[in-house]
Image 1 (tube, rainbow, N blue to C red):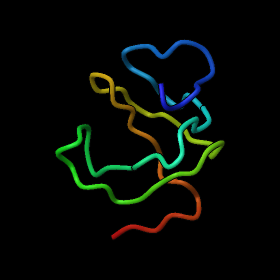
Image 2 (cartoon, rainbow, N blue to C red):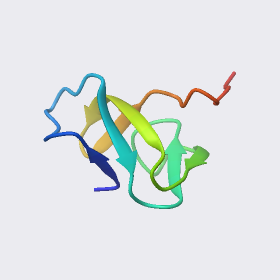
Image 3 (cartoon, rainbow, N blue to C red):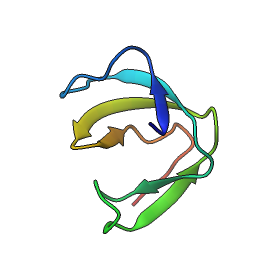
Image 4 (cartoon, rainbow, N blue to C red):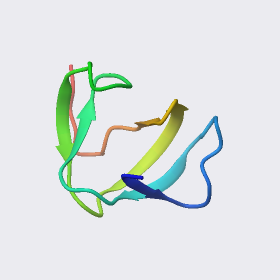
Length: 68
C-alpha cells in the first residue's frame, strides 16, 4: 500500500487519515493509470481518504493545492 492509513480501509472510506509511504506518489485525475498525473505528493505527506475505488484511493486535495 502506498498510503499508511489509520486502521483497515473499508470498501467505503470516509475521512480516513493517513501518510504517504512512497515518494514520489503521483496524484491522478481519476482512479487508474490511464488518467493523467496532475501532481505528486512526498513521503509522510498527510492525506485524507474520502473514497475507495478498486485498489485506488480518492483523497482530499492538500490545503496548499489549487486546481481549476
